[in-house]
Length: 160
Image 1 (tube, rainbow, N blue to C red):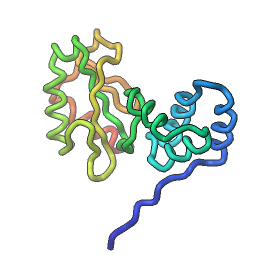
Image 2 (image 1 turned 180 degrees about the vertical axis):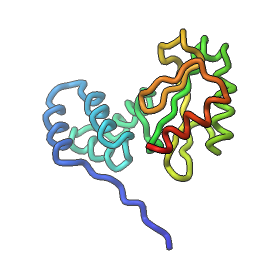
Image 3 (image 1 turned 135 degrees about the vertical axis):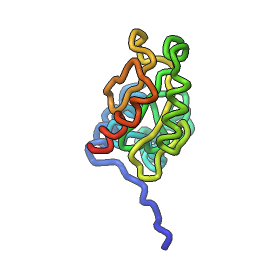
């Protein structure tokens, strides 16, 4: 049976927030941050609703979403894994960490595991150069990583 994926809609609280924000020029970024905090990404249906309420073109909403790295258009895994690819991390083996995670999770960068548990993304720098190479999962920093530590770290999050 083919299931139709139901698109989320804005909550009344978010609608009210957007209505208030639209009165102040330049608040689209603030609105999008609030939306992403609620849904963990910005669903297509929500982007259209935001544009409608703010009385701006959908292209403007998507222009902002795609310009800023912080915004996501795809739903991340329950546990989002961010690998730092800044200079210090890169030089200390971040590429090897990424390769090992891809093998362990069975996904590539910017993908989500079939069970929806994990997603994997790369960022330029997380500001923990002294701990390189660094991985952040659900806001928790894991530094001075070695490939052999990765299965244990992932297992800890699967248990949650």
